[in-house]
Amino acid sequence: MIVAICGGIGSGKSAVAEILRGLGAYTLSADAINAELLKSPAYLVRLRKLFPEAFVSGDEPDRKKIREIIFSDEERRKSLNKLAHGEIMAEIARRASGEELVFVEIPLLAEAGAQKTADKICYVRAPREERVRRIAERDGVSRAEAEAALDAQRGEEALERAADYILDNSEGFTELVSAVEKMYRECSTK
Image (tube, rainbow, N blue to C red; front, side):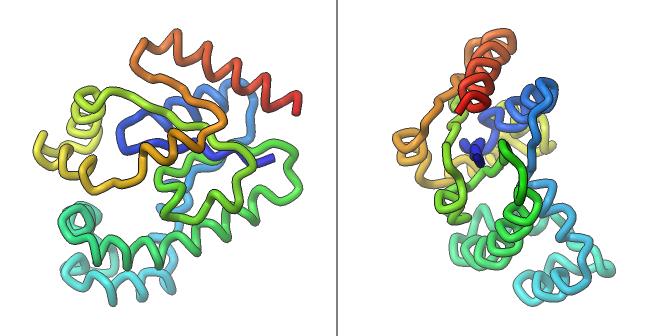
């Protein structure tokens, strides 16, 4: 069974995945797989065609520049999603093959087409103000940039409605751990 851990940027998906790893669960991260892709020469050639201005100094893309572009230009964000999501989903399927229970941290579930792959959906939510603070702190960006990142994401309400599990990440870490443990027990017995 594949359980997708989803939610908007700054909601706490990584914290949920970390708790699951601590419980012994097999977890995958779409972001980690994406980071691996960014080391693939073939992938970088395709990325350079989409974002030539992000490759000003050598073969490594300027991730901050790409981030600025995709959070301000919806068409270019869609182009990046089209390129990355197919590659990421293929790798997730490969790594999940043969596993009984896999938790996959995937921020943009609907955009990636992962609903077709996931058997269950776990939606992580947190208050907008807390998410803005987390993004700004984690990524070293301004409040305005953090808000733009949140505003660029669509479809969170639909994700929450489709979720089999909803984890509220606003009550504190102890409460989050308890909720994750409960979800893990339920998934492990199915």
